[in-house]
Image (cartoon, rainbow, N blue to C red; front, side, top):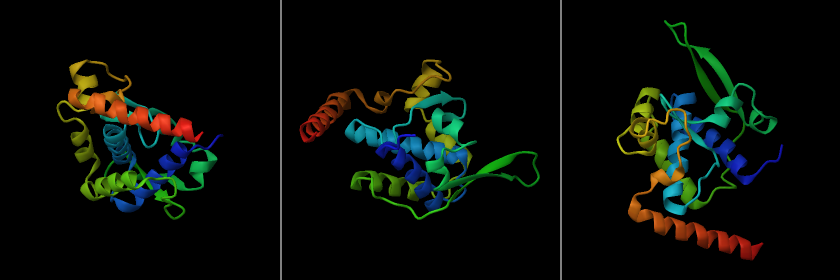
Length: 185
């Protein structure tokens, strides 16, 4: 498997959120990653982790990560342990996410780290239900796809994170960055 910077960032973002928030199970993790990617996209025109999010009933889900959790690739399995823990008084279980190594900020920009720290602080003690509610707010990207357009299970375009007056600015930032990367080759 080719390990890209986005893949490294995804794995380390999971590591970060598992370390810096309480009760970080699958639902909470998915919502934190969604907020990270969409907030960063709003500012720069690109996501942090490269994940694609679909509008599922309980909110945005990074489908490729959802599918990988049951059998993590070796690079993720080296860093993160995913284990099911029974919920007392229930037949259900909760996914527990445990980091195996120290967090590395090596591939993150200072902007990305600021967003992650702010999200971890804001949602440190939030339960999964609180996270679901936060992603379901009116006129946020999930709401626009799932409720307003009725496109259940469909991809949530990153562009929906932008207000109409922000689209041109973010497109310009993204284009400038692409030109810089092309020049540096």
